[in-house]
Length: 306
Image (cartoon, rainbow, N blue to C red; front, side, top):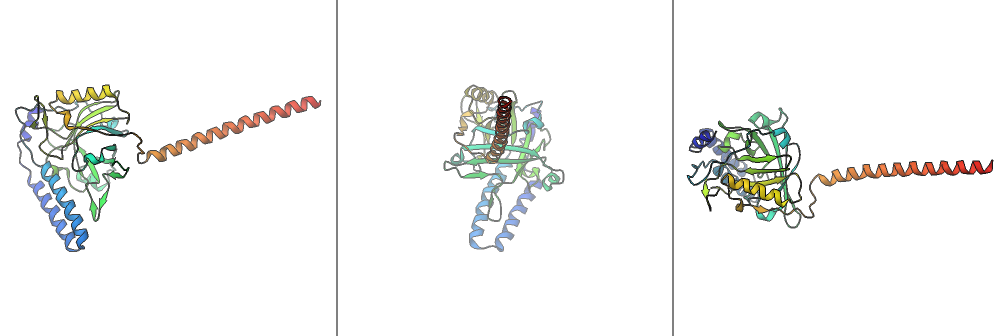
């Protein structure tokens, strides 16, 4: 409920969250003690970025009186939502999704096997995000930097905190419990499969911007308009930006994603397999037609000889 959301926004980070942070840095110290200087530098950079993400996630600021309480989808069909790939049409740049990677952005979700270690920590869904830069270089949420993942692999836990609805999800590194992140950070504000569009907020905006609208206190809170097709639909984009404004979210913090000429991971193989099947059917039809023509010629020849 909205009152529960407001009350939990005043909570301090839990003791378990602080312990997880301490364990994270102690682990990094151990790694650095056994690695060379270059690898140390890479891990330092990753640890610093990740620590900022964790600290940002645990900075639970009170909702400003100038900011509306953002509501999420009440009857959320999670199975349908994760059933197909999403294409980011617009999004707020974050340190993990910078403006330089505003090309060919996709998101895919699938249920975790109950025996997966991440499922044992409380996650239910595997998250796989992809993006490209202007040169076509691919970046994914499973990418690794030297000794470990950065920032992923990523997993999601629906309704991980008291007061969360099913459409309020916590996304984080699969090796850290959802409680590490202090509160849910992936809210499905609007979703209609008939539209093929969705609006996702990185939680409750608390920083006033303009005309009664608000943004987020942390650069790690995202905002996305997703679509089932990479083709832009201006009417739908206007509709979902309007929904953002109704929820007190400033849509101007988002940038458009370029999908022209994209080659998406996995889709080339799928197209290749489809092409092979189509070509096989064509050859089969061609062979049957050729056989029929041969039979017709033989019948004509035999009838003329008789």
